[in-house]
Image (tube, rainbow, N blue to C red):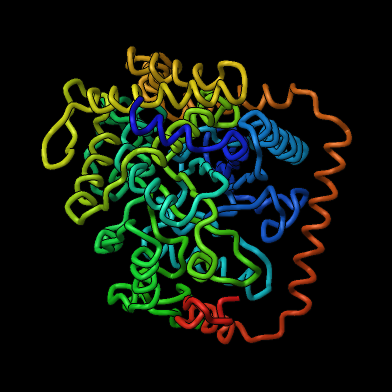
Length: 514
């Protein structure tokens, strides 16, 4: 029995049964012609500031659908489907908008035309919009229109050291998830207008990389030259927090040049530091903690420790109506448990640089035969490294199935192995196959077709009257909650902003965190 299996056996069945997960899924609202819908967030969906399940991400046009926390992949998926059913019905009553089922955006208008998310007149609502204005100035609005799925995961009894050990190993083997589940090998040319890139023309306005898995996670996606100067270590909470603290408090000259406000007095950004707030830090996985109202996330982490991890590298799968399925969630459970149970030596600046290199290589060339990644200063074939990880996942799957009953985790592993054995079955390969086979060989045309099919399938599912009433009540309650926040808000916004970004509120032990 290997060390991994021995460690697995030390985790009680009750703890494994207490494994929890939740999903946050972003999707653009589009018109049937594949162009971005510029309409405001539908009032019938409630307030994006206070609704527990239906909010917006960067843009008014970008929905974010959030499940609760669930003890099984099936329950998590069921709730995600129900949230989608509500959204599609509201959109259908209003017109012909649909949800874009791909991570890379639809046809986009000019950068300044993309509408920022709006959250009302309260200080917290204004701050959310100003933050998004800052993202637009710093990175461009088009980049923010990329959508993905975040998988939030926890296991009872884990301490900070356990979570950070998991995070280090997740980052080491993250290439495997990009390879198996990446589904963004192509994009509409409107996304790269005026930008330097190494994409090839597939046909018309469709750009691609022949062996790409996830352009979203490559140099064209959520990347930041400014943040590349951040040498964030994941060797423990103290070092991680110190790195973020500096990025949140140290002025960054290029952002100082943008200025806090424009000549007309409107805000350009929340702050001139390298990061306006914690959420601006890009990464494939984050340590997280549920925060109190008004509390800074970094303060919560320092004060009470890591509560769960947020996996951030999953593309929307356009072949699945809600972008993910229970089988994929179960594979993520296996992958995260493997990361927790494997030896996890400290990371180094050299390894961190190599992992970024591996991420970009896999995102942009992952299916290229013979592709080699960097591991411990040497080159190794991606497929050989992947095979090692897959073999180590097998006992984890057997153990979970023995505890939970059935063979669902073994089936999730078999699904991934089938993709390894037949690279043409990988989602990224299937996307390019379907684009090439379609009329006009169009990325937008392919996603339009898949988006319409997803809408039709979800609209056809039974939708109980009680569920409709529940969502109607949630929408009404969220609208009232926003009004209540606005009614008691008396602090001038500049005073609120300066207070919110104050370094004192990041300090452990300080009551100013909340």
